[in-house]
Amino acid sequence: MQHLSFQELFPHILFADFLRYFLVTGTAYLVFWVVFFKRWRHRIIQRKSPEVKKMWLEFRYSMSTVLIFALIGFGILSMKNAGYTLIYDNFAEYGGWWFIVSLALMLLLHDAWFYWTHRLMHHPKIFRHVHLVHHRSINPSPWAAYSFHPIEAVIEAGIYLLIVFTIPAHGLALFIFLVYMITRNVLGHLGIEFLPKGFLNNRWLNWHTTTTHHDLHHKHFNHNFGLYFTWWDRWFGTEDPKYRETFEEVTSREKVSEKPIPARVLKILVGAILLTNVAYAQSPVGTWTTFDEDKGTPRSIVQIEEKSSLLEGKIVSLYLQPCEPPDPVCSKCSGEQKDAKIVGMRFLWGFKKVDDKWTAGYILDPGNGTTYRSNICLENADTLKVRGYWGVFWRTQTWKRVK
Image (cartoon, rainbow, N blue to C red; front, top):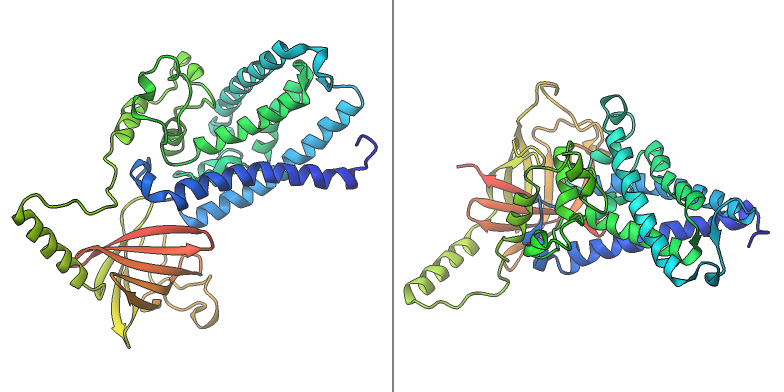
């Protein structure tokens, strides 16, 4: 391998780095947000799903990080072949005990490196130029694990150089460290707290960070800078004061029952049936208020109508921000809707009723000009759930009926 040229070797390193990111991240997203979503949805820390467009942005920045990590990986391998690093191949050279100790040292060194470089990147003069890219994910998804500005990616990769020049490490130990690092990173951005309720009460475990720990950092920015352990945050007073309270609240939520609960009293049974029938009898036809997903403030008033057994909707009015033009147009739309006025625009169409849902429709986001496949479902007479899909990704909005 040491005789391979850059052109021959680099594509293999790049592919390996991509697989390390994509397999761990994709598996976490598939397990928690797709296959077993109903089982875990009550544990969504910020009580809302990540935006599809934000996940695509996270993925794109992660690809640049993978490229940078691969370039640095090629440099480390070249220096190892030239005899400049402390990486060794013969397991017997240091023995089994050192193999375990070296892993522990790598984790401790990385945790310290991450904490202090992380705090440095939060300095006001540095943050907006470097770390802001990562913090665009206020409500992160697993895909945000490598969502770094290129400068931050280089800083994050600095730990690899520090390790190979200071800690004698077997190649297998480095591989285990890299897998553990991406796994913990992905779980930190999972958005769903998967650990049990009593985790923080266990003195042997509570010094490990949780998903809630890092999620609070993305939400509030100025606390919880640690990666693997909570020690540095506790020692230097940067742990979020509501960390324990938030973790307990999230892990104490009641799981949403997926099966109907049998009625014990005839009155309850009759009432439940009546309420169910009323909900099913309702229709999305009417006027609805949409909301900004991040701020929760009203964004627009839309009108949904039924035409030829299909639903379609138009935008009636907008709640404009001070910086927005008085009569905005869809500059990012294509076709007939290119530069069309947003007020009065048909933005929802093609929904067909199937059981208690309206499916196989399309919805246009005038903000980015993208059309998504979409389903609509009434949660109750006055609450509409609108879910848009982009490939395997999706996001759900809640609309309220205008009375």
